[in-house]
Length: 372
Image (tube, rainbow, N blue to C red; front, side):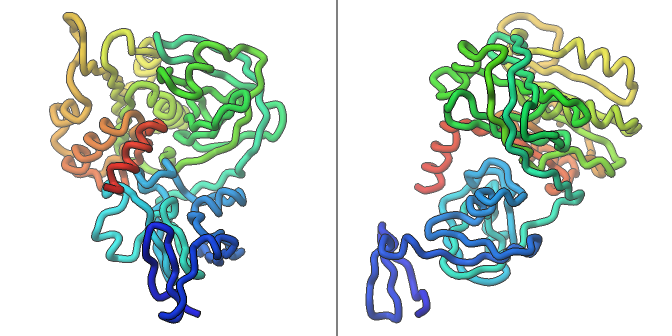
């Protein structure tokens, strides 16, 4: 039997142009997906995405947001048939789709398939760790951001590349993704967690979590890590708690002894949202190739600082960034507008390594938007 078409809200299936079977009749079916970079064939259950199946088996499939918004899991569909659930044009353009590219996080197989994820310019492979950790330090960085430091008790050692993130689970609450702020060489993972009023997890971290509590950590994940072989200029852009992975990237680059210019911009709304300013001033004083520029987008009073949006500041400071690499982390709107500006200044899209911090509410809104 061969799949002729799909139709209807229940994905009724027409086989051999004769008999219609409900999707639920076949919910126990699975397809085999061959991923070029892995040796084994991957069983994917009916209705499951390729990425979900890979992660369920702890396979290091490149990914980011897992919701069709970032493009980190972009792959080539070599053979077979998939159905793409709603995604953002930012993650996969129409021309890329027409050229046979898919997003593994939105691709549901309807036959056996073969895929190949797009290789990063410097591929890293760290073992995926399932760790039990203990809180050893909690500190307020701003009015709504807490620094969390953990000791790995079981499941380590934890290795990662600067700029990657992990999934954290507190007290049985839903897991959430947070980026490491520490250097990879440091054994105490550090995270910067911003309070989201009404959220399911961050109010617990802000108000209830205490030193000694246990946290389940799985990682590392993410493709927006430091490309250590790159010798051109670095542009590092952070918005809010997006400073965490950018701090890790900048610290790692400096500790490696890199000599190329590193332009670090930290965008926040107002004075009270700034943090680690003294830290980066000291790092810049010790490393002449590092420049640090805080930017306020909505200052409530008179200020001597630079003001505006990071995308506009970039236009003021540069006429060309050809040959540079950019690392971005923070709110999606900041990341998207800054990437557009960086490309206009000559940075290739593949040299913009972006980690947009989508909240669960953001993901729900975007899914609804692209579906309609």
